[in-house]
Image (cartoon, rainbow, N blue to C red):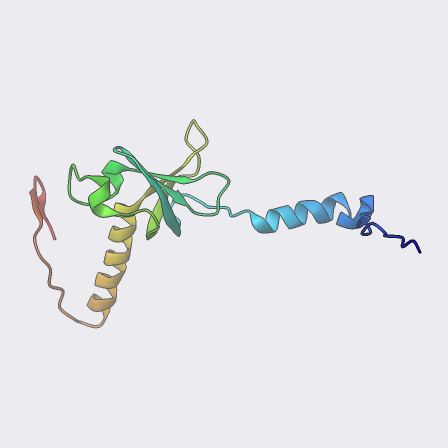
Length: 142
């Protein structure tokens, strides 16, 4: 007695299964994120170098935070501010530099968030307290 074995059926895909070109482009557009200068966005730290940190923000390229834009303190080691895998809020400084990179600032995002908090407290006639961290030419950084 002989038994016949059949090969598993190969799935057939028709050329038009993806729909029209417009449908395809609409699907691609849904997966891309678009940012404008001044937007506050969140991303995950994927790489830390001496002079920059790379964030995955769901854009076509990683976002770049130059080390001078990491902290309000000057000359900090990026490894002391963030770790790979950290979720970071950043402000979009420039959508694309000459290399096509998204330039971000963690420091300015913190300023924006803090200033919004101060304005809310002021509206409620509250008092803001803080710690002076640096003396600068025009006054103090609190």
